[in-house]
Amino acid sequence: MRIAVLSGAGISAESGVPTFRDDKTGLWAKYDPYELSSTDGWQSHPERVWAWYLWRHHLVERVQPNDGHRAVAAWQDYADVTVITQNVDNLHERAGSTTVHHLHGSLFEFWCDTCGSRFHGPLPDMPEPELEKMPPQCDICGGLIRPGIVWFGEQLPDEPWQAAVEAAATADVLVVVGTSAVVYPAAGLPEVALAQGVIVVEVNPEQTPLSGTATLSIRESASTALPRLLPQLPELLAN
Ligand code: NAD
Ligand code: ZN
Image (cartoon, rainbow, N blue to C red; front, side, top):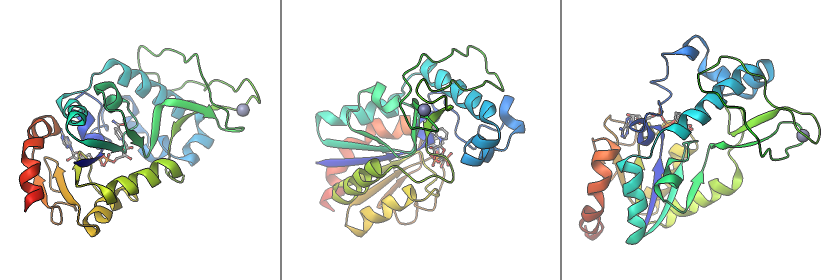
């Protein structure tokens, strides 16, 4: 059996990584989230954007994968599993998933915004959140080191996107978990799957634009629903 998983911020919420919607409290509440995650924001305030991502990098290092991430990793014992994630954390990998495509980049990759060279650290520590911190400079050209995140105004990287389309179109089941299913192009993957006759299972405590068209919509949290999902799949596939 081939299982593709499309995950979003909701699967990591139970590990303590806030979703964008929940992240309005705290230190960064006064900033426009667009400014912290766009090329415009980076150009006008790199010290704010760098502080925000450095803090999130360290925050993610301190949290643990939850039963949702672990269930997806455990499916590898029974199926060919491809994870497609909009998340920039590394919780799927830390739970043990071996094939993970990051559509929106990663908090664990950094490169020079001028010459594109990879930056291998060391990264400054940030034990407490700071609102501003100047990014390190590139050893080669002196450019600013930026987080390897796909910002608003940037194209999705080609390789993970192609792999995601292929996985969604050729799976037996696509499990869509913890995503509001409104951010395109990732939100188009369930449509690709449905058009190919792939069974689409949604896991989300809230209704989303996908709930009406999904083969099955499970209105539960990721850590509750995912560990119970595998035994239900043969019956879904048979129908
Ligand atoms: P989103 O914030 O738009 O939607 C989160 C969805 O998760 C909601 O539909 C919500 O109902 C659902 N949800 C909340 N708790 C859940 C749970 N316990 N189990 C299952 N579902 C739950 O997130 P998105 O669709 O991923 O899109 C937002 C963008 O923000 C993405 O591009 C992503 O890159 C970025 N982001 C990433 C992280 C991360 O890496 N952990 C965190 C925040 C935002
Ligand atoms: Zn450089």
